[in-house]
Image 1 (cartoon, helix red, strand yellow):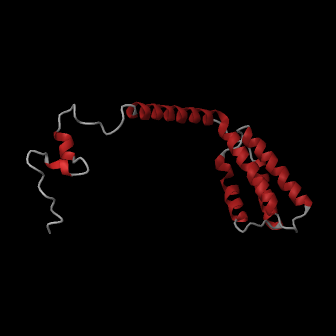
Image 2 (cartoon, helix red, strand yellow; image 1 turned 45 degrees about the vertical axis):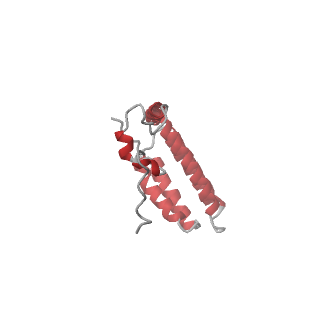
Image 3 (tube, helix red, strand yellow; image 1 turned 180 degrees about the vertical axis):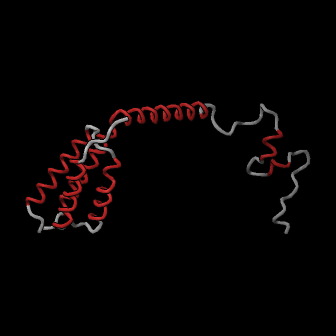
Length: 162
């Protein structure tokens, strides 16, 4: 039990002098001049500056996306998806089916880039693409289904803008 209780400090020495660390009570009870700050002086300024820069970047990205950059981002996403689906075609998908798929996808990507196509209208196609690509192979029937859905989206009347 004696090893758990530290020996009393020598006479005239502060009780915390025997400890290898500074106790919170010693920190708060010491005069302000003796108290060493927890963080360097530059930390509040550095973190404040970083947060202001991050907020400005968020506002700038929001403005960019609202002015049409979202369409370009979606177009790049669909271009990537087209390349991935082209790689997943099984050998029995013929050249005419591949060409029809690529033509409809190109037409849809052009509509996305020019903001003539809303994300709401593409939701069923995205769902179908996810289901078709889940097994990492696209059969002729699945290629026809994707082409048909893209054709319906491409030929649907444009939504009225408010």
